Amino acid sequence: MIIGFDGKRAFQNRTGLGNYSRSLLTILRQHYPADDYILFAPRQTNLFPLAVEDNVRVIVPTKALHKRFPTLWRRKAMVKEIEEAAPDVYHGLSNELPIGIEKLALKKVVTIHDLIFERFPATYNFDERYVHRWKIKRACKIADAIIAISKQTRDDLVNIYGVAPGKIHTCYQSCNPIFEIEQTVQKKLEVKKRYDLPDKYFLFVSAIAPRKNLLLICQAMAANRTELNLPLVVIGDGKKEKATVKAFMKKAGLSHLLVFLNEKPLAQEDAFTSGNDFPAIYQQALALIYPSLFEGFGLPILEALWSGLPVICTNTSSLPEVAGQAACYFEPGDTFQLAEHMKQIILDPALAADLRNKGFEQAQQFTRDKYARAIMNVYTK
Image (cartoon, rainbow, N blue to C red):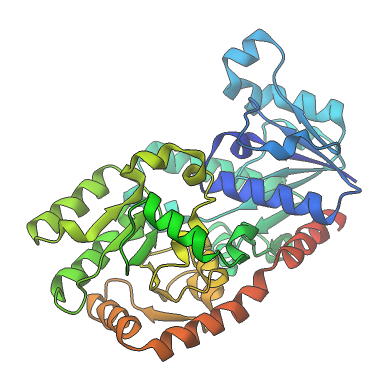
């Protein structure tokens, strides 16, 4: 089978949709090496080295106009390239399909990640909401099959947009296999020294935005400063919300307990930007705290499960789908319950050990083999 993909995110996005694209393409090639894979991308970068493999081909703009205006190529001219390459299936990996592809005879698949902009419209401006809505509705209409990354996203497509349930396939993703590897003591010490990590710390991994709710953790720490006098290490960045969080902790006299790894000089190096150092950071933490108000999936939770890291998270959206019985849950906005779970992790080693064991068991629901088979089943149908 020849399968074409929207390769933009794989080459240009270091997080989120980029990770999803790179992970899926890598796993498919590993499990189905007899198939051929074509990436259509506005430009090729070294962010995705898999593209040099024999059965992976990259098609980029060749005309000067399209090189100068890659968005124009991606939205319209790319369809001509797709038609000439003649894949059996084309897969849009990030909520959209190119204009004009509906005229081609090939089968079309699109992955829809979430409809968060519909649930939390105040966090998006009008133009963003309009564009997201138009792209997703159009893609769902012309696609032969839709992949939802969680049951939550599937239900939202059915309930909010009226998409036919039979057209949607829920395919749970896996994560980077480096999180499955127990890091050596030496590696952990090297990473601890490199980033000047505290001896004990909680971990937050996400973009810093209002929906991600980092401020709630800070509020819990401020309200229980004696019992929760441990640092919070943050992997992720933001602007306005990050400034709000910093101002809150400064006013509370707790700025010393916030460690933003993205602000460290080493955060610009490949070991951090590629995520290669993340398993050692995860595996030395007390717990991952994920207080998000809503998620399409919640990949850091899966990374924590594979890392043997206890999870504390909200009981909303897709998060219980990912964490199962391997997490301490709390209602969004419940500072008291969050603080209680943090105290339990500190004071009850048996609970932490139980969560680790349940985490490894839960992670088996999201193996690379299951992920690859689920996606390939959609293609073959």
